Image (cartoon, rainbow, N blue to C red; front, top):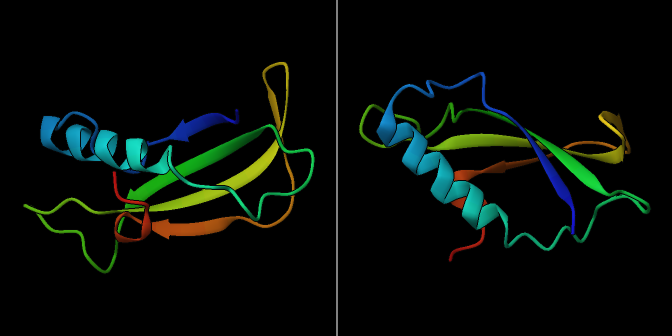
Length: 93
């Protein structure tokens, strides 16, 4: 199983509704197949930002930049190019 490293500094984690919607998207992300990850990757770093296209006050949608890599101890080494996802493109649960 891949280890996920999350960077959510780009969103307001003090708002419980935003937290709940992000947690839902992260559960959906657990169902990604990671078909295009580089060989040897054992982790992925996710940077979360508000979606420029679909984010609003009542509808919190996010943009996820996923970078696969190797986790050596507490050090992450990126492999390959990053992949971009939106809340709307994650698998349904």
